[in-house]
Image (tube, rainbow, N blue to C red; front, top):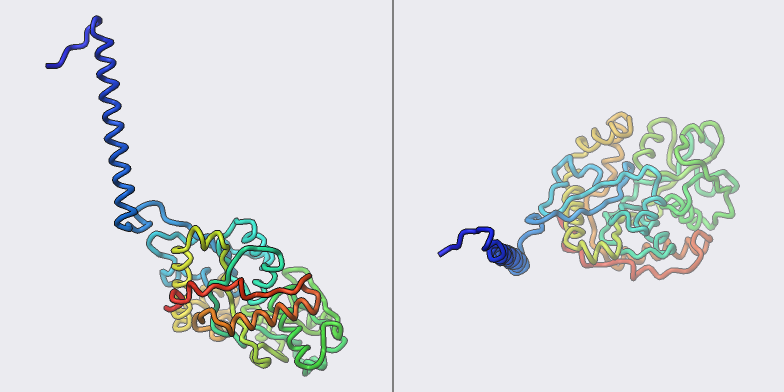
Length: 342
């Protein structure tokens, strides 16, 4: 029988109330504990709790994740893809990756070498199929420069420590020349290279699609590209070691969505070109030219890919682009190769 609370029994009531509260707290604790055990035991998806956020550094020039939403490829159960568009270029991406501000970066083949030289802890988790025509050395229409040999003594513009510099180095090497044989010219970011070419500020430049397609449509032509040199250049995707360790399932999902999205983009270049044309304020037909040169999918991480990056690293060291000789094989991982299938 319950005892009513009166002034003379208040102590007993307080004690009983306290015990009831303790019992309720114990029930709640046990319920929470059993729920946690169920999640672990039954393997409930991450979406049952808070989704894992994967922070992606992408580029409007050659990025892939920047258009995931066009095909719904930004939707994955348990994962949120958070895109950061880096207009400041690859150096800013690599700095953010090293600082732990992003998890993944979409970069060129030269960037992993630069990241390794800077002491960044990362792995190449995926790479596109070769992209032979997406980057070239160009000159203005009417230029007397017709061949790579004609670049001797000429002002050639390219961004430092990039795929473009590698293209210049490789093209010169193939013709018995080095960077010492040209006048390397470094222009401020955002410079209109077409204007610079036509004004004679520079004689030639190396650049990448989409801008490359625009320059070609407005009065330039290429004298050499990666395809001419037989080099399997590719867009590469790198993730911090920390992201791979703590967000492995999200990284795997990202690689799979890359493969899926590239296959979709290859089948629907007009849709992607229209979207990117609005970003670049360019005619869709110009962007479509670049889109049709894009890789159709991913390739597995392989010895061939490692060897091609080692070639860049050796050339960059020989030309003084990086301060020390590198061995690149430990910056690759094959653990996401199965995810690289659409």
